[in-house]
Amino acid sequence: MITKFALEFILHAKDSSPKSIKNALAEFGSDLIVSECQKPTESCNYKVEMVTEDPTLVFDLCSQLGRIRSVKVHESGKL
Image 1 (tube, rainbow, N blue to C red):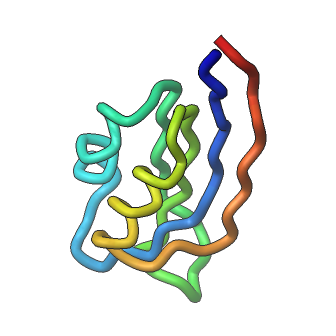
Image 2: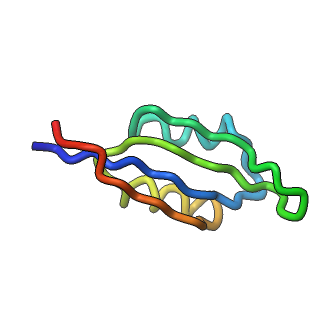
């Protein structure tokens, strides 16, 4: 059985856009949502939500794009 994980985290990435982040992560999971955070004191922050089988791959890729903060990982079920 394959376990799936629901991820939620903030990505601080200066030279990225929601579209480029979504394109980079699309092959690693499903239900992918990338949205800009609306905090006036912090620019270039993106909220990322997705379901994946391997959170480590997602976090490794995102660490190349910027700094990861406020991570939430929930086991969402088994296939």
